[in-house]
Amino acid sequence: MGRDSLWNELCELLERGHEPAEEELERLANSEGLRERLRERVDAFWVELSESPPRAAAEARLGHLLALRLGLADLRADLALRDATASFVLGRPVRAAEVLEGELVHHPRGGPGTTRLRLLALQGKVLLARGQVQPALVAFEEALALVRAQGLAGAEGSVLSALGNARLLQGDLASAADYYRQAQGLAERYATDEGEAVALGNRALVAQLRGEHEAARGDYELALDKTRAGGDRRCAIPLHANLGLLCAERGELEAAREQLEQGLELTQALEDRASEALLRVRLAHVDRMRGARAAAHEELRRADLGLDALADPRDPLPGGPARLAWWIESARLALAEGEPAPALELLDLAAARAEALSHAFGACWSLVLRGEALRQRDEAAAAQALLERARAEAASLEQPLLGGTLETYLAAAALDAGDLEGCRSALDRARQRLDEETPAACEAALVQVRLLRARGEASAAEELRDLLHQRASAQGWGALVEASAPQ
Image (cartoon, rainbow, N blue to C red):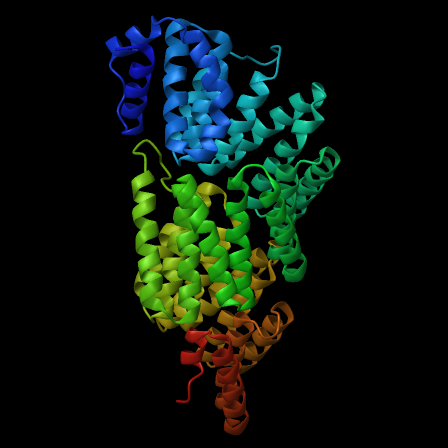
């Protein structure tokens, strides 16, 4: 068998998840012109990764194995980076981490060239995806120091964005926004569509979390325009995912579904299974809001299967942040169905994962939803006490939707406990945080209906309920149509 035929055969073997036999590797390693073939693979990798990720991963893996066998130090580092990148893109962060750790030992601190910098930048992203925020910060900070020491301003923006992502996970919006601002300035200076798209998307995410929805929408749309102009199509996936969630928060459920389905098409074309699972979780979120609970369960089932397929027995946190999102959305669906017991079990898992990931938003949402689950389980006093304690934590995260939802649940718990004044105060705080005419504001207003009835103001309660029912019906908010229906 010739060199090219053997190469293709071993790549196909790797694509099926099997390692080549030693004798086959040895035969290929001794074939004529192999160094030139490896150099071709290094140069062609990025195009292949965008067109056929599994094949690109197999080519990089095989090339890396051969470079290690032959002691080709110059090619080994390039192929290790590509091997790790492909593993990471295909949702195999444990394997990516192993490749990077194996290569970093050959590039100690203070060594020449940019290889350590590139390895550290990727290692930080892999660590962050696995929930190891502090080690990721260490890698990013060393990478930033190397970038600046070597005067590589063109590469600085990517590292700054990654540092912003780590701070965002920790719930430090101010620091994240500052890193993103610096990255955006560099992206604009060097005028790369991909860099500007990432910077705009990051700025939009901060604005979205702060409740600045129109500013966020504008930046997401500009960023998507940049991805269409050129660069890696993968950049568009989180933009569609986040814009879809923003539309859902605004109650624009058809627009939300459209964005999420566009992102889903990209994940399938690029075989990005981890992102596909997250998009399915967000589609479940939209289906739940539409009142289509069977459809929500189906999206969650498919996301669950996808995450299980990616699980690595060596990973202590399989599924990473996507599994956390799955548990939280599954708990919300259980609460929508009036099932607090399974919701509490799911929220226990979510809280443990959020702590392990240093995921501040996930931790606080888990706590807030636990309060509502306790209320549904007729433990109103416990729910009220828990939500009162959670208020300071929610306020520190600067997310009005989170704070407003907490106050809505607190109002409901206070009302169930017979604390009408506590209910009124919590509703006042909810109204201050939530945009009028959004689903979250409508949910708070439904608690106001209950409060009016408790005060004996039946006519005012019915008038408000009817208004909310009409609004929810007009917008297609099926879950709220049901909740606001005449009793």
